[in-house]
Length: 463
Image (cartoon, rainbow, N blue to C red; front, side, top):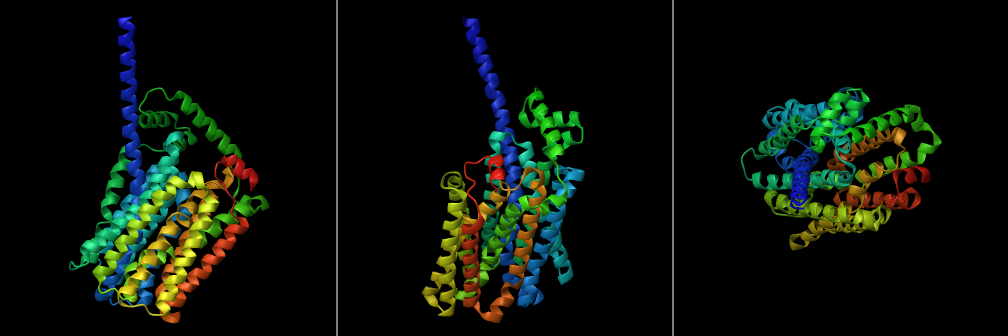
């Protein structure tokens, strides 16, 4: 009896040790997931502060400021378009390593630029890296993570995008009074890039990608590292069967033109476009500019108000993560869009009647409310739904198309925003975004399904 008791304690300790190793690996994977999202979010937000100071160095007008934003987004669209093919050819890990190097090098190059061509070259490098990582990071993480952790990891990736935006706003505020502070704003973005590079040097290549190329020994070694145990034969067998089944179901690009794919493709591209033409990234990129136009006293005060907007984005995204699987995707999407519509109308009217002084903070408050409703609706739900609605045989390619549509829409809307302000004025510009939100509500009512609680196969059958 005592011997049995000792054996039981020994087995329990072994189990705890294995669990602690799993926890260590889970934390490492979570950090890598966070850094991929952090790169995305930091560069998205840091532009807001940088734009306030470029005019003093490069004498940018509204069109050049728009081009500064748009050129990185165009590069991101190109990067996203080629990311899937590159990852299939060279491996997920290898492509993410190149993206981390490219992002860090581009951030440093843009920060030290003394001419416009060099500045724009740095922005192109950063944009391409973001486009690639925005596609490959979720793919890589889904392939290296055990099934019961997958939802948490994907959520962490989305959550850290908002963390990156918030951090960039804090950095913008802290450096707003520093000589050439905008250069440091850009250069600091290289830090998470270097950390991501280090993390990817530790993590193995995707076992699924390796198994798909009959590199079974390397796939086995990768699984042993990721799972913290020697016996991975059962998971490796399942993995090989999935790869074989996936190759059987692989479909040509022409399938994207077939009638049965039309509806999910319309939904994916439609949500991608509406996520941008309702104005969210205009707010993210140009929030300090908007607040200065509303009458806030200085660049530092405008950036400080923007920090608050970033905090709202983080908090409400965390709320959305808790509600998506209970309240439902479609209901939260409609609720968020209605809140965005009301806030955009108030912002537009506020600019048209020229609120000044303390009343200008009404616009600041409405921008915060707009971001809050976006963060619990259209923000996370677009990325979630495009991972659910497409048939397995074309899921990767269809998601790539939707992602490119998102980046291109982002580029166009952000690139013309400042010119639009000059042509039709601040108030009518936000009323325009409100009208696009009305279309988004009608689009959701017309075609967007509820996917809560359904398996991917059930969603595929229903569409």
